[in-house]
Length: 154
Ligand code: SF4
Image (cartoon, rainbow, N blue to C red; front, side, top):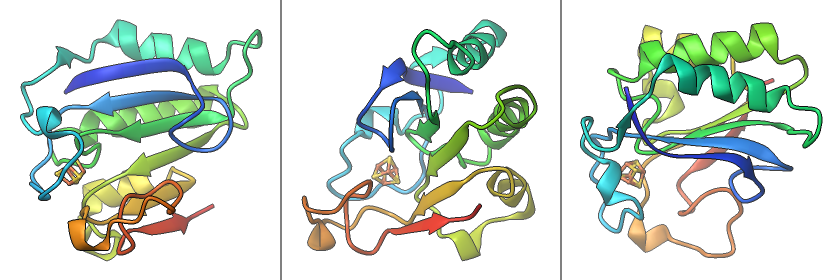
């Protein structure tokens, strides 16, 4: 898996103070996408073991308490990203007590395959669906267009 940006302290992408990772790779090609440069799987930089360890350490850093981890892109649930995202969310669950996990995807919750569902079973909130320009609404919080749904899963 590749990634484009990692913000160890972020107050924009989700509630509270968070760690946020933008991964590479998206098949949805939404017209008006705000992040076209992330579409190619091989764009950005390799997501290394060191990066994964850094995210876990940042979530557990008590000097700047984080509410949780936000995963966006690109699409964290791109089939080729899923094994890496699953390992990351499993580690957050095991090693970062009390931290929530929010994921943004272009897939719909009811379309997910078994591997994608394994990830979703471990997260707190999924914001799903493609970005639809005609339904764009700057007043929406955490989502770009009105068709997207914020699923509070746990
Ligand atoms: S799902 Fe998100 S990243 Fe992918 S094309 Fe649509 S808006 Fe862009």
